[in-house]
Length: 272
Figure: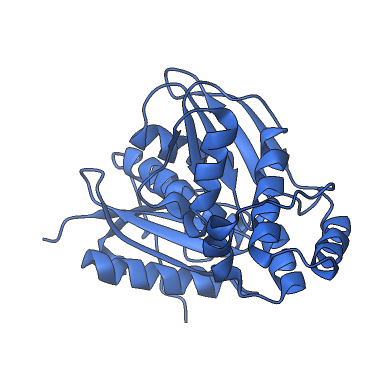
């Protein structure tokens, strides 16, 4: 008989992430895709990709937990869900036990979550009301600069004289970017200023404890943001091996913790 696996699904507004974990708590499969307009279908596709990586099928799934913006839109998971804050905390605490400040920068929001020495959440702050400091902000600025989003990280590294932006507002920042271009500023210097704006916006949300972890898709694809954050706070920043999967890993850990619960019906059913 094949060994059971445990699944965490993080259905974000921008990206869907799935993590598959074995009974020992090892990550054995994962997938990330744009969420699109059909959260259920995207989650189903990510599930199949991650199960294939794990060498498992849906019949091997013992339990699944959904989290994130679209967690209620996953029809093939039973009513087992957790908040994204809780899953993010669980995932980071798994890799870095003890007191932490978690900086999560996602596609549509950013947050700072604080954990005590036992890994319990002590506080959190979230920015939902505007795109400042998020992946959506970077996408907008890349469009203004007419450069591919994936080139921003390398451009920021090349900067020799950062151009600071005076506003956090996406609209006003866009105007500042255009003005900087008009005045002949280097694109690399403008991009570093955009990165600086993202970090400053997040850091002003709350204070940080001694140990800091960064997560999220923006961090995963723009590691230079981590270096800039270290310079600003004056200490090392910790990173999970796959920063974008922290929430999905946390959800999978919740699923694994419920292993002993009695189940009278299949946790997953196939979606056409």
